[in-house]
Length: 200
Image 1: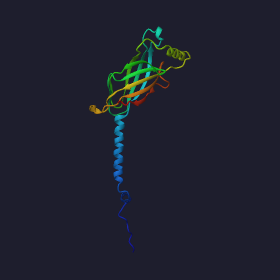
Image 2 (image 1 turned 45 degrees about the horizontal axis):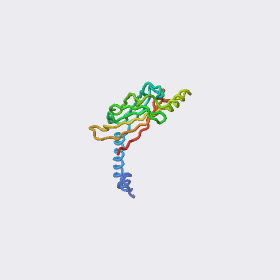
Image 3 (image 1 turned 90 degrees about the vertical axis):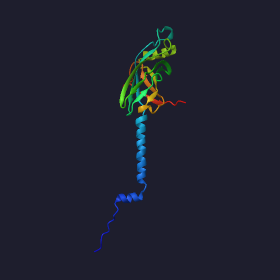
Image 4 (image 1 turned 60 degrees about the horizontal axis):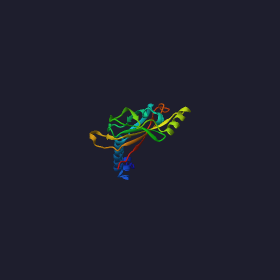
């Protein structure tokens, strides 16, 4: 009776012989994914939103009693596992209408632990009395037509700590936020667009 020849090699052995460097490719791929994960956890920017809750002094300069001021609420969400800290004095918020800066505020220093949310309230103030006449007429025209007045809040955050023990110094981030003069935008405070500032 003829015998049956059974191969001593299973499919995995044959596969390995056909692709002898597969384990090395898998190892490098896994290492690359781990590096990407670490960079995502450490270097992911904050999610920031801004809202203007109240204002004063939006009168033309010749009859203004004081500088324009805006009460601004910033909400920052840290999606990373590491805490983020920001230096006092270097961070700023600028409120603008129609591209013209009206008020400015220095941000306090603060830290966000990993996977947390922080709210920062501040008052941005202008450097002179009232606002230019042309801007006042444009703003009042919108309000007279019962249109919502759009503002821009530009926020600079100067990172101090991204990982423990002050290992990494982060480049400043610029956040461009849409806000409304008379309250929140439709659907609540909008998420700001972030830009990494390259310093020479």
